[in-house]
Length: 342
Image (cartoon, rainbow, N blue to C red; front, side, top):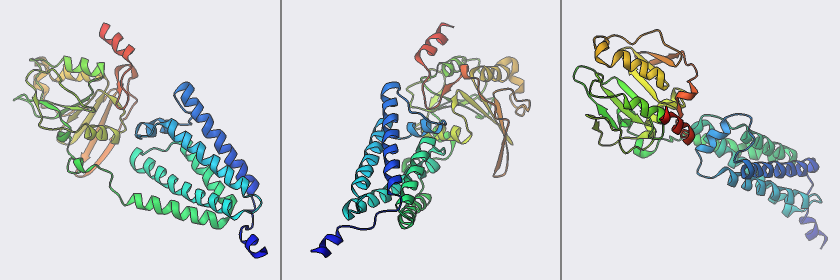
C-alpha cells in the first residue's frame, strides 16, 4: 500500500514557486492583450513586427491570445496542484512545457523564414516558456530545447514558395497587362493596386501621346486598368510583385521600376513617378528615351546597380507618405475621397 502511494508522487521542482508565478503572469499578460484587441483592435507591441506577422496569419490575433491565456492557465493548474509532488500533475505540466517550445519553434521559424521580421511580443512569450522549462529543471529545459531546435531545423530544410508559383520567378509573370510602343523597349514596370488612388492618378496620365512601353504589375487582383491599347496577359500573379517589392524593402505603392542595360532605378510615390513620365514618356522628351537611367536620384528614388549575378542597393530613402498607399493595407477611404476632390 505504501509503495503504491509512493508511485503517485515524485520530487517537486526546485523552483516550483517561480513556475506558478510565471504561469500566473502569463495568464495575466495574454488576457490583457486579448482585452486590448477587443477594446482597441490592437495589441501592445514594441515594434512593427507584430502587425506584419498578424497580416500573414489566418488565425485572428484574439484567438492566438485566448489560446495563449488558456495554455498558461492550464500550466498554472498543473503546477499548482503538483506543488505537493503529484506525479500526474507534474508530468502533465512538463508535457505542456515541451509542447509549448515545439509550438514556439513553429512560430519563430514562421517569423524568420516567411515574415522575415520578429514580433517582440512573441519573443517575450518565447522567453517566458523557456524560463518555465528552466525552473522545472535542467533536464526539462534540455528536452524542450531539443524539440525547439528540431522544429527550426525541419523548417530550414523546406521551400515555402507555393507550387503554383514555383516556376514563376520573372516579373513578367506578375504582369497583368502591357502597353507596347514600337519606338520604346519594355523596360518600365508600374506596381499598383486597384484600391490606391495615387496609383489611379498615375495610370490616368497614360494616354495616346504616351511614348513609353510599360508593364502593369498589380500587388492584388484587378479587373481592369482602363488604358487604351494595353494587352492583357494570359495569367499573372500579384504575389510575385509583392515579393519583389518586399525584397527591396518597399512597402508602399505606386512604384515605377526603370530598367536599363546595367542599372535598375526604382521610383516611389506619385509625384516622383509623374515627374519621370513627364520628362521621358511624352513627345517633348521622346528623344531621351534611349538614354541611360539618370544618376541624380531624388528623394523617393533608389538605384540598383547590377554586375553579372551581383546586385548592390544604395540610396533607399523613406517614401512620401501622403503620395503612397500600403502594399498590404488599403488607403483610408477618407484619404481616397480627399484625393478625388483634388
